[in-house]
Amino acid sequence: MSEIIPVISATGLFTPPETITNEELVASFNAYVELFNARHAAEIAAGTVAELAPSSVEFIEKASGIKARHVLSKASLLDPEIIAPRWPERPNEEVSVMAEMGIKAAQDALQRAGRDPKDVDAVLCAASNMQRPYPAMAIEIQDALGIEGFAFDMNVACSSATFGIQTAADFIRAGNARSVLVVSPEICTGHNNMKNRDSHFIFGDVATAVLVEAQDMAPHPHWQIIGTRLKTVYSNNIRNNFGFLNCATPETIGTPDKLFVQEGRKVFKEVVPMVATMICEHSGDLGLDHAGLRRLWLHQANQGMNRLIAQRVLGHEASEDESPTVLDTYGNTSSAGSIIAFHLNNADLAAGDTGVICSFGAGYSAGTVFIRKVA
Picture 1 (cartoon, rainbow, N blue to C red):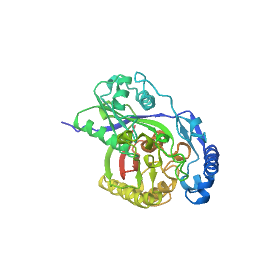
Picture 2: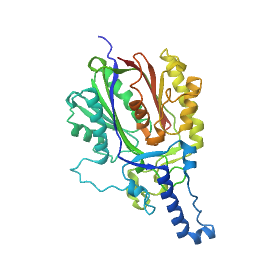
Picture 3: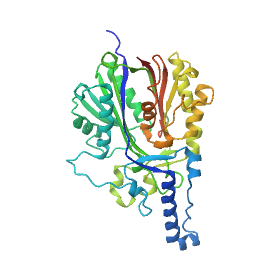
Picture 4: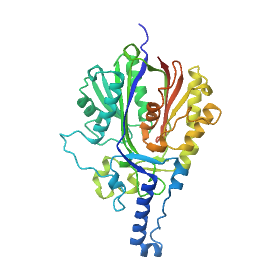
């Protein structure tokens, strides 16, 4: 029996229509800081409350390279009295917010591949945060698209999409499925602390989809998956404590320690060498020269991290062509970031060109997906 080769047939993208620029974000954040400091003037003077410092466009761009981000709830995020996303509660009979985003991205991928939903065997919802524990978001998306078979959710933080791609590829190699949708709806503003100067600017909202299929049914062109690798190393340097146990203490919901927190300098120092080494070693095991990779589609978390990882892999300062960036306009979109970079920057590559989709984030977790274009 001949080997079944998994490929990426198409990708899809849903981008929220609303955008927040750094200028808008800073104006809102600084208004909040002024309100906070005025309301707590006595405590600040007494030394029992720390005075908040304002943010700036220059600080944000130097720290991250981010200039804007797409969001689902602009008005409340910019309201100095709220500075958090607010969505109207939807009844159980109505499609949920995350599922709606995932459906739109999945429909885009299916259309690009010329694929009927009835031809898909499975849906994996791979994202950093799920709207609810159950029923699974993946099953809701499966139902809305009219897909038979099976579906489940998985969470490996910013590496969820690449972990999902390997899972889908393994299903196809094993003959358990021939067509699998990996959907990553990311409402990152929902778990970010927008009142924290060091992280209020980091995240944006988006959804992506990757259609992984057996090569003999894939459209042309497509991308052969020539190798995948996953890695996890436990670390507290990126953490989100919000979980089902918080329901027992509702007064803690939304407090800073239940939202995204990170030790940015430690993350940079520890993750950059881990990821660069992982890409180089994996490419060597596949018989590839890492310095000769045509393109790196890296996780979009921090401009400095990507620059250094690409330099260590390629052996020189990477050009925008070699390591494209979407971070400046999308912000950090967690697991969707590397997929957005691939989705928007792959059509110009020629048959035979080889590159790597790479994610990294909390856990620590990292995933590499080496692919080659087939015309």
